[in-house]
Length: 362
Image 1 (spheres, rainbow, N blue to C red):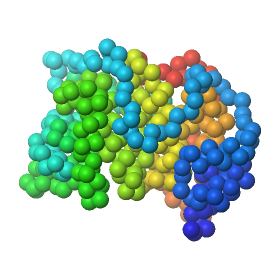
Image 2: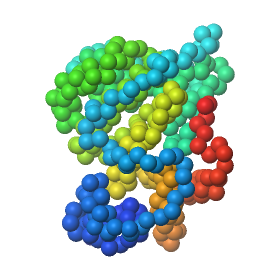
Image 3: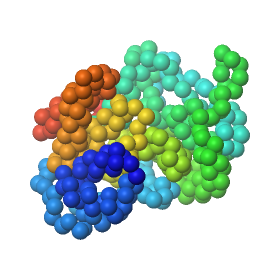
């Protein structure tokens, strides 16, 4: 392995091991530069007590840490009554949704129910974990786009909030645009169709999964199916797959909150995917890496891990210092780091405020 890759992995492991260089060295010596959370726990067990810290208490932490499940189909939610509600917008106003013609690249089913959001039809605020909360701008109905954003094939259960993962009809060229999914991913998704169908039966959600806008429960399951697809992308080493998986689970957590359900389990799973993305440097753009570090800062703070939260801010600060030392630093990257670092510092200073964890609209 290259020295550069080893040094980068060492820097990232230092965050996880709370700046204990010998723990990072021990991990790399034994396990190389592949991240595995069980291997992380093995190293922690060999260095008992190192890096223990006092922490603020944001939520109860009696339950054990949970790793992201090895198989995302293992998680079947128990929904309350509210989760099966579908919030209704004002019918006298125009819908912010419009149909988009998409076909499935896996089973070739055409004319799937896919709804796009009209530009500037809704305003967006973010919850503390960067999941979007949608508000009406006045002209259009107020719709929670999370209830409509994921397209799910009712033939093979391929799911994605990104229409480009499907076969799109281009009105300008009057031709179909192929799916952006890699051939290997398409092949593996075809082979795993029966597994997705078995999960669909296990959820007992039925055909309401394909109605848009969905209930909270159906929307949560739609994001689970999107995560199942992204798991295949991660296995194929598609860049950004773990970043997607983390974002899907913060959205699931937000939907749980909006439905009056506990959000801790999906947030813990999101944290594991974001950690993996961070340690693997699995980002197509610096902006997305900065956003991930900021989100991990908030997730650690939420679970009462103040020291770990500060460590992620320190990563951003160190990156800022390194770039500022360059004679001609990349301005876009430096601007992103400064933006997210500033947001993190403001959050840290406001952490005792009573509405610190408030979700917009709740």
